[in-house]
Image 1: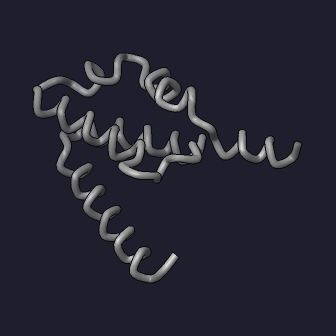
Image 2: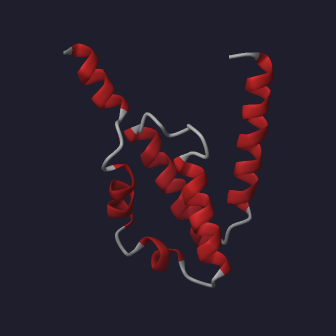
Length: 101
């Protein structure tokens, strides 16, 4: 990875964080908890392309713009929402198990 790619990645991440901070407070809290969960579970494709976090952010922005509460968007069980997001994704743990075998 070149220095230019690192700098561009940091700029993109800062722009992403700015968009998160523009969300209503309840959306920000739920987003940060989802982010923590995804960083722990570690889907392999978390940062590829538009990225799962960016897709969640877009989903949250649309919900906030429509005047919906965050739990109306995710459902009452946020953990189940997260599990559904990554149920078909390969995680770093899966990759580690494959490498061991």
